[in-house]
Image (cartoon, rainbow, N blue to C red; front, side, top):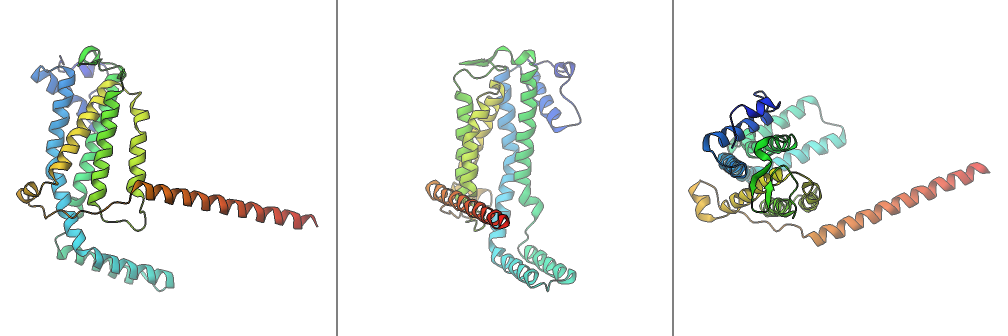
Length: 289
């Protein structure tokens, strides 16, 4: 079991960084509960996700407010872009537009800090525990060596021999990405953004497969419980309980459509490159004569 102060002896557990805080939380939880390392990682991860849930709910509430005034915001931004294109925009007019946008936000009580709280907290939580657990497994501390795991992953400092944990982590994060795509309105500027992020997330398996089992297990717990929370926020009765408006469902762009766009874009890029090379060749021939 974990012992208080042990990670400090091996140079980990700083009191001044989020990564160190994550390591100290893991050690303290394991020492106080007497749980094995794998259970300690699960308890800490799930507890952290539960603490983040209120911030995610606030983020969704602010997103609903933003959707109500988005057409007005877009109109002001388009006006600013038109003035910029004409060269008629001034510092004073730009400031007036910004004040107008702030008034539109205030009309529905929209707060940027609350809107960003969920995303920032998730990023800080995930990054801190990723770096913290990786450092603990790379040392490795005694509590993560053979016998610290369960089932097929007995050694948490070694790679999962069957790649089940990295696969589970990857699948759960891809699932959250697909859920998020149905909650976001269509992005006209970047219509293939979510599909691109989904492919990138899927390919992360190649990276996770080479990481220690402790890290993959923690990420799998984070992803699976995050998927559960995302599903919970889709239940009408739960949304009503926490004060969320009825969910608006969007139809995301299919992966096939995105692949078609990417192939077309690659073809246009190759054609532009070919024309540029032909132009350079013609210039060189003219210069010879």
